[in-house]
Image (cartoon, rainbow, N blue to C red; front, side, top):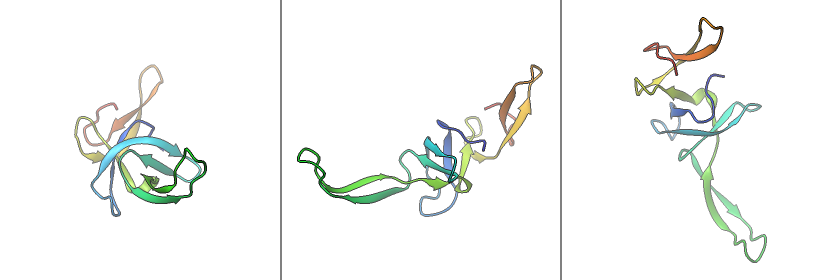
Length: 102
């Protein structure tokens, strides 16, 4: 998977289509990403202690990796990522549209 934590991604499908944000967390076993400020859900919680009140909490929910695309900093558009090897045999990610190293 070429998307990593801290990358800016855009949502391609679903109710959050067109929104973008930074990747907060990556769930590799389920192939899902948690994006900052996208896909909010409401959770009803019970009061656990006197100092911790219950109620309806709003938090982000993970999206499947196939529903998001990396946003190139140079193109400012959702693009696919490719891989390229430098002369010193280090592997880098590149934007397939503008060939810029990410």
